[in-house]
Amino acid sequence: MKKRGNMVQYHMRKVSLLIFCVEDDNGIRDLMIYALNAAGFEAKGFPDGASFWEALREDTPELVLLDIMLPGEDGISILKWLRSDGNQVPVIMATAKGAEYDKVIGLDLGADDYLAKPFGMMEMVSRVKAVLRRVSPVSRNEVLSHCGIQMDTAQHMVTVDGARAEFTFKEYELLRKFMENPGRVFTRDQLLASVWGDSYTGETRTVDVHIGTLRTKLGRCGDCIETVRGVGYRLGAVK
Image (tube, rainbow, N blue to C red; front, side, top):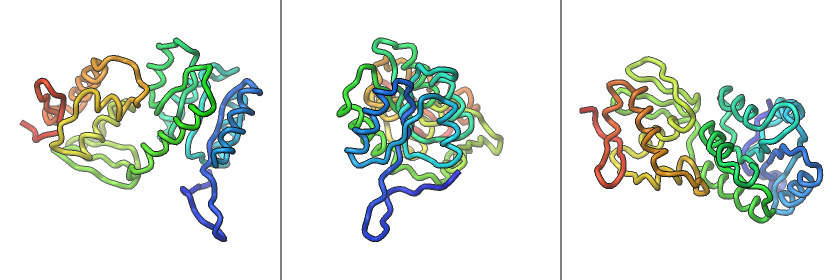
């Protein structure tokens, strides 16, 4: 896979950020590519998973727009394979209007946002820019340590008391949020917006469920995720 940097300069010209659009409808895909190019991005389109995987072997996009309903391998399967392979490229899922189950599954598997069809091109470009802003400040080469927990963000790996621990994408993102801000109290709404995205419409109970499974997987270190009654959660010392 070729390595692509962020915005770089060559002879005073900016190289556009590369966006992959995986959409089987030729008309919609062409419109998406046109709108993204007009907004200053470099966009490439693919009608199915096979052509997407082939392109991914040659280049690394800054973001992927991924339709769920695709011929052959669907978008959920593609996202699952991306995340299981450790690829953390931001992904925005395109779902049918009202397909709440698809939205929840996609977000839980690691999608960064979603668009409900039919969507406008201005909305699409706005969502792309918002996700890129959200992920760009994150350090990809930082090791965070707290209470016997060590997180290597470059390798997307967590150890607890020296032993490797496995988490879902959302559990990992919650833990990273806490470890990047030890002692800070986050409300459930703040955690939803940060980890699930501003457009997520589920209940805050989702946060409680993920905190519960995160604590269990952390073992004795799970006690360091403290409940602040009436407010939310914070990362404190092991009790």
